[in-house]
Image (cartoon, rainbow, N blue to C red; front, top):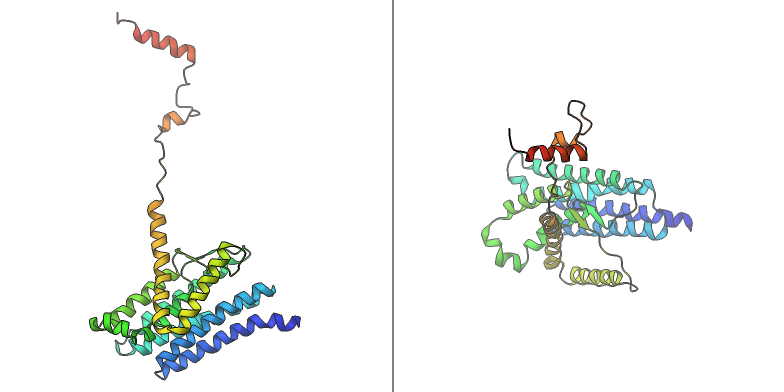
Length: 279
């Protein structure tokens, strides 16, 4: 039983890899809708493997490294190839370089996460946009583009190519940035934070099951925008510290080139002499 519990997180991780690879195959065959959903399934398994490892106390260095390698494929290569086959394959000879830049950002993001989190207690914020959030946001763009909302508001502008370029570059920059993104709160009923986490997860679950095409892409954009707005507000609230201007000669009392400071009695006599009239 102990061995089964230890293997379970890695099984979820390999399931993540399975759906990520299947998404690449679907994107190559032109089935962009299911390719996007498979990346979402990979994201769900990626979330579960970490929680299973923490709850069972079976987190290992091997599992963390395996998870990072799998995430590069599921949330880096798979969304990039999905976007390339969807729109960039006919955009020019060097359009694939944009997809390569995105994959590089995912790899750098995961490598930095492994370095910063090694041997440190878990924080409530991510440094930089998490790669699963970036990959799933990019993956569910195509299902959202087939909805009536998109066709009624954005489709007539014919900005699909420009919008994907801006979105992919924005996600790549945010992943390697220092912008803080909050983690999902834990689920519970004994604290306000736990109740809030329970309600939030229920809302996401209901929205993802009832109307995934309409719900998931706006949710991803909201999460991406939340980090930018939060960082901007905190940056504006920080005031620069006022540093008093001090004469360097007055501050350096030990400078041998300067005359010794006047004592209180000598300063008083010197003041009396300055008040005397000139002869």
